[in-house]
Image (cartoon, rainbow over all chains, first blue to last red; front, side, top):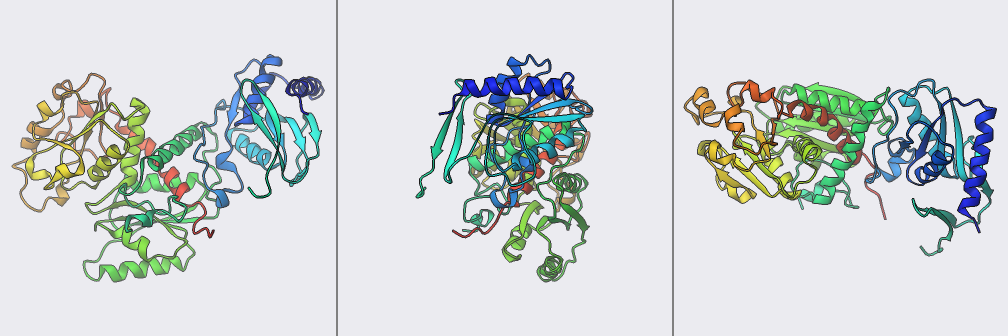
Length: 168
Length: 321
């Protein structure tokens, strides 16, 4: 059973360590919609980040557009106009194939050239498809085929493991 | 049947030819997606990779600087390759030469046509005859429809007024020759505006105009009462084949929007115009450039709306099962 508070505590501690290690100055935190934003809201508060939380919607940067089309629930990204030279903490809920992070990095770089980006995710699961990996994690798990992680929130924030019916 | 040509088997947008036949959910989806493209203006690199590797041809059989440039910019911001062609129409054998043009462009592996044509139904005709993987967007056909203009107007209205359900909208001027007005009326009624009122001299109204779902007024002064949104139309001199009006100055006296007349509408009413404006014919410069005018906002919004429509029409088509 995954406990949200345990994971957040672990992720917070990891981030604190990496902020010192990599020398992050006045970092800008960016949450990826939707689950990543919920996790980022918690971390943003715990770490006392000065700048408002930035929100990223990667819908226009996905690599599967030709298969699934435009997400009708797309929301505008809310990033500061100038992120050139900034230290960024990018936050998502689950790291799975890595494709979301690729899309997110592409979008971030269209806003400007940051100094460095640190990736923090609540849960890293197996199934990576491209050579990216998180810098800070709450936990790492191996899942059965057909299992998926479902985050609900924003308050209360909770995690469930779901087994998809073979029929569904 | 003929309107379903706009949707694919999953009910998603495939061609965008007319507002008619599209429901409120789909129109709202266009507005919502356009909203997210507006956010892109904050990006240093104003481009998203959605249509990388796609080729879009702007086929303009009729001149239009504003529409063509905003379509072109929209395509470029979606990372598509775009080619703009201005083609003069020959008066004979239009059907044949049009199809020939299309076949030749298809042979160059084009993915989308954006069509502007002086004949009503031209975009529809191309959509019916083009290869199945190609999408067609109507950028204005004759006196029939100009759906992206109507949608950018709806977008601008929603930006300022948020909700359509309490809005009284007046469309003023040359309704008879206006494809923009037809599309606007359909869009406003589909999105649930409280009232659409057309204000024009009898000679500039189509017969049975009430059947479009509008109230009719022939007097600008009384017609502007309680109005939230004023849409002025251009007096289409080039389409006036018979003497429908005594003179331009007479028209301005009766139907031109001046500061004094604007005061009759609600105090927070906005003034719109699809452009190009005839200053001193349908609208006074003081109103066109005044604080209640959103005319230039309409132009900016045109890019986001056209991006939304192009992106939606280019999603996977012809899915089986």
